[in-house]
Image (cartoon, rainbow, N blue to C red; front, side, top):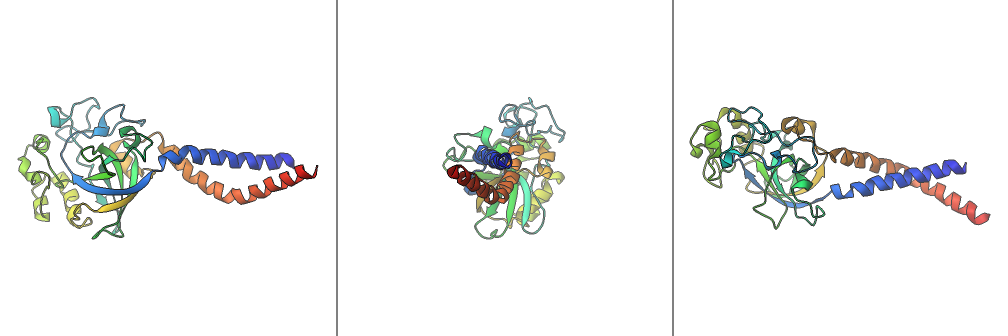
Length: 273
């Protein structure tokens, strides 16, 4: 009987250890959101950025997956952002997508790209007109140009362009097709000017996203949906640990009360000896 008691105690301690080891994966907080689509190779598309199955896939100018070592089209290279790394609606209140991410080091225990590249986050919007809506995004890129706040720059075709001209190189069109520098296109009608493969994501901005202007959000890390990792081919090694934390926490909740009773019984038996 005593051996049975000790097994209960060992199980509880093991579950506590799993939860403790995974605590540093569960950062959450408040964030600002912006938007971009510059056609550059995603920053998380380089080997060695984090512990993952493979970097985020990049594409050639004709939208075919290319070698991970190919240079970015924003610096004379041949690798660009793939057209399917754009947002889409799951239903009226939930969407999936991709983002450039920056999370303040205080939350990531000092980590930068190694902490967030290819991780997924749930964004629960906290400003109008998106209150009640959420996105799950995978960090395919980085957003270092703002480093004083948590930031998710949503990858939205026509959402924002830069002076890099990578989109013009990738699609063989004038850069102006992608809208004004730092703001992107201005209406759904402008989406029709984009390359056909990018129009759905552009329309998403004016439909599901309601053309929100940099909405705020609460964020937390979640296990990546297969729908996102199938597009990027990137799965973080610690996603399994994060998934295990969730199930372990449930197990811990269900066993703690009975195990504490067992511990109490053992202590009482020791005292009575």
